[in-house]
Length: 376
Length: 252
Image 1 (tube, rainbow over the protein chains, first blue to last red):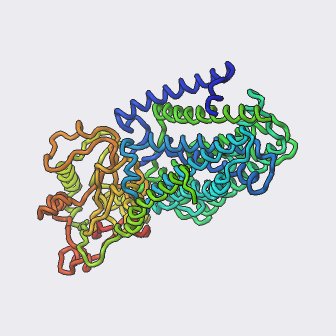
Image 2: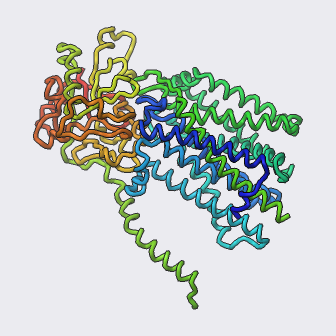
Image 3: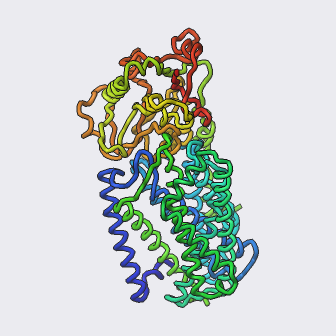
């Protein structure tokens, strides 16, 4: 089936070339980092994780959110979702690959990565994260590919795929829960040390992921013959709306606990975190998106809907891909305020990883769109 | 039952996966190995802060210099990427959660030596995904620089800021390398090792040797000097509420 990605129109090839250029720039920046060490990044002894781990965390959420198109189709038998389910699964594949790459570029000694498997340590949440992410990647490749192949051949999917699909549902929840535990289990980091972390992650993931999927569906609608069902779109919008409301609610819960209790750790972390301008931009975008999404008239307007989806995605990317990590480190163990600013090479490497993800996404979506068009 | 190729390969793979059984069991059986065994030696340091204050802030610098010399700790000027095993922090920073408005300025500013606390229940040991950070029988939290992958999870977990990462190749920043201790490479984390290599040779830790306000000894031995000091005078530890069980005590 992969050969279907090898024929496309001019726009398709321009887009692929553009991504390849970004990947090349990212790779050359990475070579620089590989030779000189993480000194080329903005990371410090006080802020020892930054943009890379933030992107990793955010993308685990995007990967997990595939479950929001899997559940309606396979558990609730909503047939109209069948057209987008495979796109959700392929989005998960691309997102998990990006997650893994972001972990690798963050390592000081990347060539020793397999030490995690050579010396397995079940007491480390990172060990579990690697396990569940690897498993989730495998599940989504197997499920997505086989479902699509059977659609192409016009035969029922192999029987063994069904149990894998059911397994992938709790598995999706597990990847983001475990990623939440990476942070929530660290007693010395006030901003992360809350039982709400994993729940907040899941809520924001189920808003940002489907928002991205809506945007991607609408783009495919324009550049290809792919047509997305209006009903599916409205149902995805409902998911985004609920998840966004819950996300904002969870953030407000943190604010209450911090400021009503007046316990310094929690309160000061929030205070210092919101000194960073992008956190306010994130809050503003969240409110703006909610105004559009909660209003029936505005959300059924397709331009307003696109704006809302972009606002949700950018807001949560700022909050989770940048702010969440900064919040954990903003107060050092000596109660100094630590600032962090990613450097140009760090951003180039991150853009390169995103470009790799989008290339995988483009290839997989191209295959899926072509197969679906031919099978109709 | 007829055996076709598919079934044969399937059964073969299933049989092969049995080989993974023992290693997997061993991994989970080993979860407890990081816990401290009871009744053995437990090393700790008690710092007599009054004695230290009369000597002036220079002695902390001397202790740090001695430590950093024997352990080939690179001298990196850029503070954000500095590697430090022991250094002085003013009381208002090292004990930021234990100050009040009536403490006088000079006490708030007085330097307290800070280093790895070799916690009884060390978060860095718990989170390390490769076992590169581990706990010895005698309580020392040790590092295997050759196994560390540089993920820096331990730095996020340590509530004492005691860990340093080699953002760049440290070798050009070690002027006179000590041939008896390994140099590190870029991309790994490092920290105080309680001078495990000196203890093995029957010597005191370097910072203790040059500074008699610091007392090193076995906290499990009621006849030891450190035990008697802690038993007879009031002492504090950094961030005790987190339950990590630090083994560095400050007598105030």
